[in-house]
Length: 495
Image (cartoon, rainbow, N blue to C red):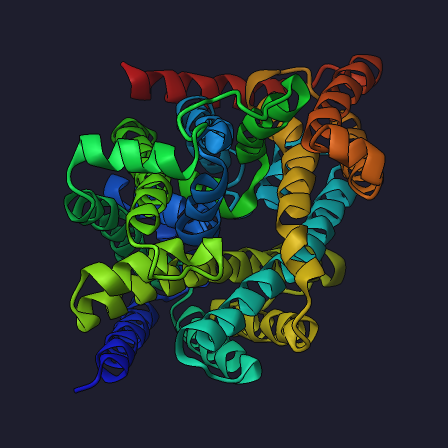
């Protein structure tokens, strides 16, 4: 068989595996809680890998190695921020969010948790937060669809639209039929593929370039500043890259995994697994970029037309075509794991936080599960429509959406879990101020070029949340009793 056939076979096997997992999720889905949150039955391994795979998109295997290939370790500040944010998210958000969402009327979405957390006058907050999730994620999903189309275009020479429909179709299928369980279990497979690929490429690359010493010297010949953490860095630039870690506290598709784990006690094990996965995966991506610089310095006859393809090209050079095909599938896994998680959270926002609240109609669990599936299809079709014409500006919205979610939801989630006197008015105004600040700052070339918009967005939202809550606070025994119960349960999990 030709190299092309081996690689295509690997991709087909991967697709079939994802669909089979979707069917398994379908058999275990009985009600809306199962479809949106897996019945809160995820183990620590599945929770950790699912959160990691949902977080890291194609950027981990293509964007980050490409940046390190070009600029060296000066690009390491973002991975440091992301690793720190991952650990803090599991440490300070996961245990309390798991217990509080169960205590607060068994909330299965972030907006429904905020509604149940604040009790009175919180319906507006719930609907607004649901709309914010729906709008941001529709464009976020579009960016993943674009990446899928570009992947098949560059890897196999397919038409962009054909690649878009293949990736979109398979992702929609297993998310549509299997819901949260399918998304989470496919995330485990996808996260494992990403992890192994990012370890194997630099390890075999080091052997191919003559060992650690030769690799380092060749990389320095390619770029004398390859190991300089501050070569082209500015203070504002380093702060901006580190600040990516702030975004974790407000990413619905990540923190919903904390709500789905079996118990708060298991978040400790999940934290260790999740943090280890992130550190090793980011380390593998960083090493891939540096090893790539060394390899192409030594092999000048091999051309690399696009720095972001360094992982793919090394995989094709170093491994058998079928294994190289699995490396390609790992990139697809990174794309699809993020898209499927975002589709499901968008569906839950539409059904649980907008439809149920606005129409207030009682219906069977089967009706709501089917409505959730229709919502997945509806949102995916809109995202495909936006992605139909290849548009790089959609891809640039990833950083914008990360800042938007981090600033809108991050301070609200943290204060909801750690401040008893936090009010619904404080939460609503914080969400509005965070979203507006990110929008204004992010659309200003001068401001966004100086400092990443999540820094002012998160800071101003936090200040507004505290000030408005102090002004509007009124004693509510029911809210405070639930808060104390959630905190006590979370503390027990750490004992």
